[in-house]
Image (cartoon, rainbow, N blue to C red; front, side, top):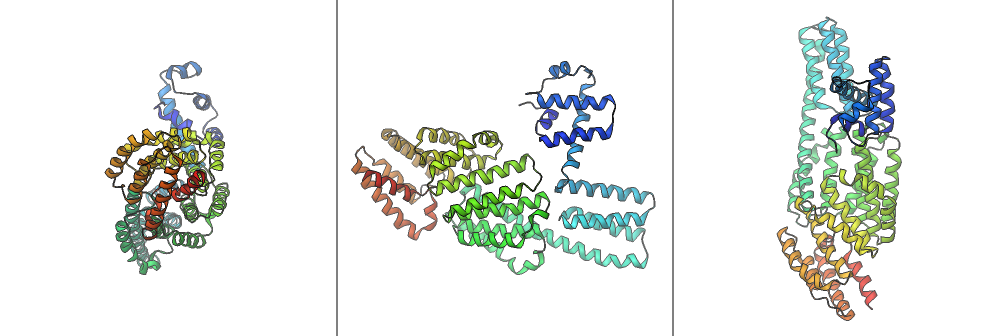
Length: 501
């Protein structure tokens, strides 16, 4: 792909943003130079790649010496139009607050101190409502400076105590938010390493102790959406990581009721609010309530129709709806529906696959492989497995890394490649041991597969034995029951035993 910054920016504009930009250009000028920008923009939209010579040939009114200057001005015009277009975002709010700060400086330089004060009061309300704390502190500082140096009447002196109290409150709130962010970072790093379930609960216990200390201080930060979101979301991650899905679901329900008017939030707050719907879907799927999970997925789709969209939001929406719906089919053993869901969304899969973070690519591709495996389309499953194995060097999510290797063995089992399985088992055993994932269920499964022979009776007896030992083990080691990601191995064994009977 071209590295030309203007070309890349133009290619990432949505159709509505392109239309808005053309209208935006007319505000600046009706002369020929404006039409040059419109012509160049239209040409770049249609181009499959950026080529300087091709650009000049197709835009004869642009002189070669002018091209770089016109491109830079067009780039800045597009960014300026996007600021006004995306008016319902925190970025836009920050721009407006910066503009208010500039207005304040201008009014101060003109000696219009009362107008400068009123500008700061309006800016304070916006920063406070949108929880842009670093700018709020700057605004409060400017208010203090204005009172101390220019507005020295008794009327304004009374504001100093209030401003100091506000600053103290904001500093306290920011301290809470930063602490919850650090805890969230710890949990996220653990998730990247272990996966959705932490079979070693030591990390969770340590983080939970830290978080529990703040329960008695909830009143200090409960009115802050950002602090509350982080605080409760950290607890959700804790419950999820130790398999307490009923508790995690109850917490999601609590948050969704507490902040039940997402449509009044800006886009950033809306995305945070919507994350609890995504969390609710995970909990419902893990509890086997797949139909309810799909109902929530449809709710997310409807919510997004009321909000401005952009490339990032489109990607998040696709990840949270397509793949969670796919997961509901996989975990409900509705593999034919899962494959149908994949094939009807193939265009979006191709579009978004490489745009996802590598952590997400891994788990998403694995779910597609699982779908094909369950639907007895083993060659297609193998294609997706091989795509994931190429990402193994990233060492994200041990649960996915180990499950990919186990699924690879099961695919070859279904294809009847028993000699290949025996050759692969030693490699898989070494690999799982290397990533600290060669635990009892994994060892048991590898031992069983190593004994597989061609006879049906041999398979049936081995699967019955494996199923028995796993069920006994899971009774006292609940977290180990999630060792095979998004897949109920015991249920699969039941189906195999039924076929062999």
